[in-house]
Image (cartoon, rainbow, N blue to C red; front, side):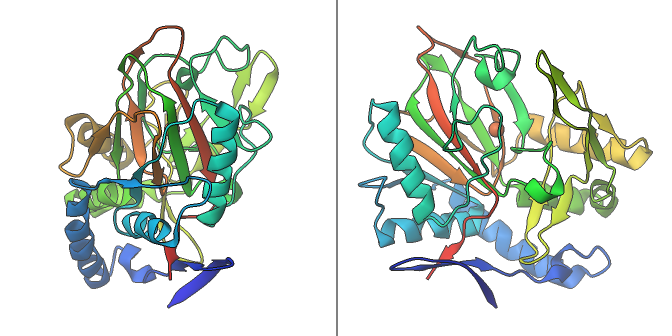
Amino acid sequence: MDMKVCRMDFLTIEQNILDPDIWNLSKDSAYKNWREKKLKSAQKLKNAPFINIRNLANPSLEEIKKLAKYCSEINMALYQTSPKNNPDEVRSDLKKFTEKMGLKIAEKHRSADRDGIVAITPTDKETQRAYIPYSNKALNWHTDGYYNDKKEQIRSMVLHCLSPANKGGESQFLDPEIAYIRMRDKNPEFIRAFMHEEAMIIPENLDERGILRKKSVGPVFSFDKKSNHLIMRYTARTRFIEWRKDKITKQAVDFLQNLLLQGDEFMRTTILQAGQGILCNNSLHNRSAFEDENNKRLLFRIRFYNRIGKVN
Ligand SMILES: [Fe+2]
């Protein structure tokens, strides 16, 4: 059964509805079927190509279908288009591109401009300089918006490169469904611990302007009420975070940190080049430190409230 989320002039973007029993820890058969299919499609990640988009502002139906297909199978798609130097032009193209993909921009990020587009580049701006994304330091594993409350959960995002660093700035991506599988296979109690409503607490965040974000308390794993898709809220940071104080939560945190550190056959590593981008259903990701001349590394990021749908 499918749920229509967006109708456009020439295509319909739909959201698959999953069997809720997949996530039921006391019913293993739905999980096993889903797991088998998922691990099979995850193989596609290894050779997933950069899909060519001839005109980012107006992708063809075939291009949209390809992107949506990869996103439905491995929760991410890589793409490339002709590089453009004018940031305003790229902003406009990206906005049109994401509209064509049926995505709803989450505009509230404090660093976003009025279009909801955030420039990820080293900066001295007072409001951003204390934050690692806007430096050349390594950025630890996380899903985007892990501090958002339930009503504003980030389901997908796009990262588009205008200019890479001279050296470094490599990102790794891991499908949250693969992280879920690794944890459930190791010990289903890890999943139960991560589904707890108070599993992960991010204390309120103060900066020189006062309180920007209130304390965020919630699970690592939750499920979309309508589509039953997995939602993951996670950060590997070790400061300004509290985990629920019980033994199994601690073991679950250690297991996931080790998995991310040691790597998984389905991790994808890439350094985005000018004109290249990644569209994903909020996959886990990180970034290595980089060296640059004149702060030239520039990526645009947009976050969305909805998942990337399937195109019919
Ligand atoms: Fe991120």
